[in-house]
Length: 232
Image: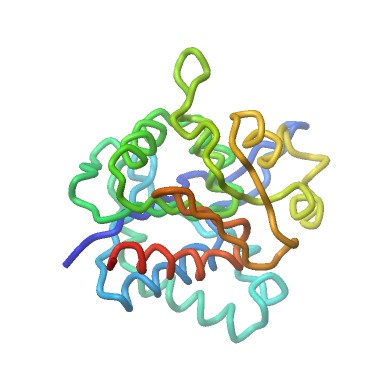
């Protein structure tokens, strides 16, 4: 059975510019929707985090108002509870990329805290891009691309077409004026050819083997594109 590596944040909080530690983690839909797509397609999922810590779900993402209703929230919670992979992550240091058909990074505000500066994740992303195998990154997870820069500030992701959580969406959840930096701004500085669709609507961008999605609603469609690429 072919495997897909799912790299999750290990952070349980996000440090805002005033020093406040906002509770966070990974966003439920961004794990659940792709996990369901991958496993339904017959792939085995391996979860990896910095240091092999057990990832925590952002509880806000399981609130009915954020999940799209109580029924959806309960369904997502059930998948998280049944996914043993979440309770037995491997460390990013232990990853052998050749063991996986593809790599997927879900978001949540957690990656803004840890994956954006994690050297092991940065090395993995550089290797994954060079491999030519599908690499999927959604919502806030493109923050991890900031850790792919070398000592001179250069990154192999420079000028790739991609998307990620936009400033308008960050303002919509009340953090645009509280964050130390905004993802859209930093991706443009990297530099990448950043683009976005309407706020909260599914929007994905594919450039060579890099697959990116703008927001939680994009995670399911992105996963389907990854599976299509893996089976082609």
